Structures are given as C-alpha cells and as structure tokens.
Figure 1 (cartoon, one colour):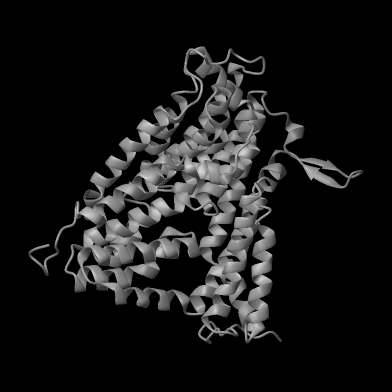
Figure 2 (cartoon, rainbow, N blue to C red):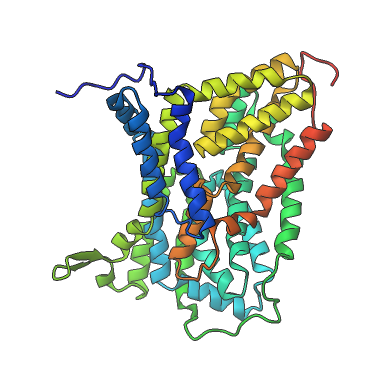
Length: 464
C-alpha cells in the first residue's frame, strides 16, 4: 500500500544547495536558450521544465520523497484554481472568436475614426479600470487579451505595444487595488491596515501610470488618419456579444468568485450566440470518429490553454522543492548581513523580492515568504513605517512579475493573443519590453529607495 508523503521530512540533495538549485538552473537556462533562438513559446518550455524535473529526481537523496513533494506543489489549491480558470477562460475566448465580437469591435472603431495610434492608450486606461475594480491581474488578462489585442492590431496598432498595454493594465490593478492578493498579503505580513497601504502607495502608482500613459500614446502605430478602411469581414452583428465580457466584468467587480463568473459568462455566451444565430449548434461539440478527433468551441477553448497549464504544473512543482529544501529560508536570512542604512536595507529587501519573484513567479507567495524578514529588517530594526515596507514589497513584486517573460501574466497574454487569430510576429521578450507600466513602476520604486521619497519613520523612530 502506498504511504502518505511526510511533508515534514527534510528534502536533501547531493551537493547541498548547489544540487537543490541545479534543477531550476536547468529550467532557466533552457528557457533563455529558447528565447535567444526566438522560440519562447509556452509549449516549448515543457522541455526544459521536464529536464529540470529529471535533474531534481536524479540529484535527490530520496527520489520518492522528492517526487511526492513535486506532486504536492502541482496539486496545491492555488494551482488547481488557476488551471480551471484558464480552461474556462479559453472557452469564453473561443466563443468571442467564433461569434464575431472582434470583427464587430473592429467595425465600430474604424467607423468612428479610432486609429491604432491611440488604441493602446485606450486599452490601457479601460483595462486599468477593470483591474482596479477586480484586483486580479490574470482575470484582467483573461477578459481583455482575446478581444482587445486583435482589435488593436486590426486598427494598425503595434502588436507588442498592444499586448504590453494589456499586461500594464493588469499590473496596475494588481499593484493598486485594495482587494488584490498582493495588497492583502503585504498588509497582513507587515501588520498594517489595507487602507493605509493603498494610501501610502498612491503617489507611486499615479506617477508610474502617468509615465506609462505617455509611452502608450507615442509608442507607434498607425495614426487615426492612416487607419485602415473597414475590412470586408468586419460587421456590426457580433457587437451583441459585448454583453458577455460586460457580464464577466460586472460579476468580477461585485466580488463574485472568478470560477463562478467564468462559468456564468460561458453559459451566457453560448445561449446568446445560439439565440442570435452567430454560433451554429453543431460547433459546440464536433466529434469525428473516422479521424478520431474531437473539436468544437468547448473542446478547442480548453485545448487553447493546455500549453501554459502544463508548464504551470511543472513550474509550481519545482517551486515547492525550493521551498521544502529550505532555500527560501536561507535566502531570506542571508539578506540581514548587508544592512547599514535605510537605503541599503530597502535595496536588500528589493533585491530579495526580485530574486523570489524569479523563483516563484507569484506575488502573494513572494510576499508571504519575504514578509517576516522585511518586517524584522525594515520595521523593527530600522524603525520604518510598516506601510512603507508593505508598499515596497507589493510595488516591486507587481513590477517584476509583469517583466519576467515566463511569469503567468505575460505568458497568458502572449498565448491568448496568439489564439485570437490576429498575427503575433514578436517574441515574449519584445512584448515584455512594451509593458511600460511595469518598467515605470520599477523605476519609480527604485527612485523612491535611492532618494528616500515617501520614506517615513514608524512609531518606534521619530526621525529618518
């Protein structure tokens, strides 16, 4: 009979910490090689991820225990929720593609004279309102990327800039919304009220948003005067399907669980598409027994996001090995050696945050890991305001995870853009370079650390 895995048992690797880190080094090296060759696709990342898993099992002193912890990492509630949300989002996106919403929006924008030059800015502003209202970066990407990206490209907007606008909007909400998991985790770990964190970081968010808006306005693309004429495929018939993303946005804004909102949106989209004659009933499920294939809107929607789902499973399993192997604990403790001033203390906390983001690609996980040491170093030892510590952690992690090419928001945006039917003739790296809000927020936070802008003492210290 199989035994229940003992999570408390130590996970040991040959060659110590080097052996623990080597699987992740294999993963990152493989992804960098693919990126350098212009082949950075989520499905291509399976190969270095599987190589990393094989390396971990080969170096583990107890391979069976290592395998158990890999599976535990893949089977976490966070991963399960994320995968189900992605699959349902794929169905909704496929519905919008099948029923002509993109063509309808393209017709509307061109008919009203809205060109590619301003559309990325419009997408950034509209997406920011949605992400601020919902507090979910991935939910914003899911709602916007399948629709806004192909419309922007059809209007003449630059592809990487258009995708970057969607990521930027998602990052803005994640970094500023009171109900985002990043905000809650930062406030909780520093022992401060969520409202205090939101007020303290408002200056940074507004500065970064203003910089990003300027870049999106002048980032390139066709001018309004040079916008293309209405293509033959464009038709206003599909505009009725705007009710589906609108329903999804309203439910998310009202705090409905993302899974419930996605199921409701998918069901409403199917019913509306059938009633409006935009979705042939036979397209819901297509079974070809002769060719031994299954297709249709529902199946193709799920299949469209299998690439990122498999990579996420493998990645989160490897992250769990780093956690159970004690690497995160040792990394956090090592930062306490370099503290000489407020500036170096904050720089050390920022560097640790970026390192953890590179390893976990999850802002809330990063903050929960770093939170206790950040509170000890920044609040207790240096006497800084706990809201300042929370702002640094949340701002830096939100910026980093919008700029790391293999993080889930960029990967999902890239995948949904590619599945939308519009051309994607750029790499993930090029797209990340156009995440202007992410870069602006990173620079604003660095400026704040170096100059002391916004740094305030806590109750345990009266002066800077």
